[in-house]
Image 1 (tube, rainbow, N blue to C red):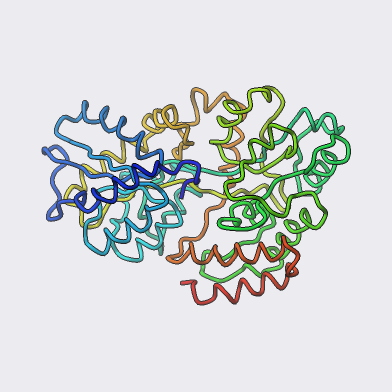
Image 2 (cartoon, rainbow, N blue to C red):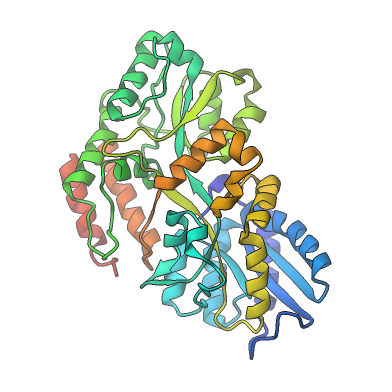
Length: 414
């Protein structure tokens, strides 16, 4: 799933509720790609709004194809997809985040990817992996998302540190130095509790070599490596380096700008938020790869494009997805949306190849790790959210929190 910051407007979501039921594919035998036909596409959040412009350009080059894009808010997307799957009204093409794909593949409503048309080697390994269920890919990577370290270089210099932290020890040293020598209120921001706290935790968990569930379906949230990540994450709270609570809708960018939070893990969309919302910071901040324990490993997110198993327009759908996920289409989509390309060839030219910050994201994606594809992944991660909170709030030790998380998710893992 994409970030909450990109959720579509309430008006779009409400309008979608009245139109989705009528947007399913026509069913029946698949129509040849060169025949006159209409493709139905559901895309989420801001992507749904921007994709309509791409569809218009595509239609000019393919006058036999009408692409009908329906924007769907992330807040209602899951339920709309569930309802459509149950009613047999899935669109020809649907955008899906990694947390959804396992569930809908398990329901049997997705067409396997044609691996002769779409080559795994064209994409970041983690982006391809997040659509694979039982050795079969069900989605083509569209864009990727990962986390890197944002930090204030001016305040780091004031604290006597002139390079980005490369490991956990150096990150804790910088966080402490920010407070003690640069006078910041906090040294770092990571989420203390609530929905999707796990996304702040992933860089610690994966860099330690831990995980929640491994690729074989074995629960590893209480492995020694995972417990080590819980301890490290919790230490920032017990030492007073990180705030223990935040209000709903907390904006770390504002505190980054006013110097109370000089360091945080963030996604690519936050670069433009800093440039536009905190212009006084120009030249005073940078991004770096995730400081590692065993290695620098961040989470891999983003979205894939799927084709409905019941679509009557599979050939045309495959052609449109080829356009969107090829190197040229990916570069165009980046210019329109600033979503990072999943196709590695798109990173070889233009801004993606020359901008230092973007190059950091590209380097981080090479080692990024995707979540295992599990039908109940959203439920599983909510249990881990609770475990993390028990550690950050001092209610449980890392070992006890990890053991309870194992017990809580045992019945949810396939």
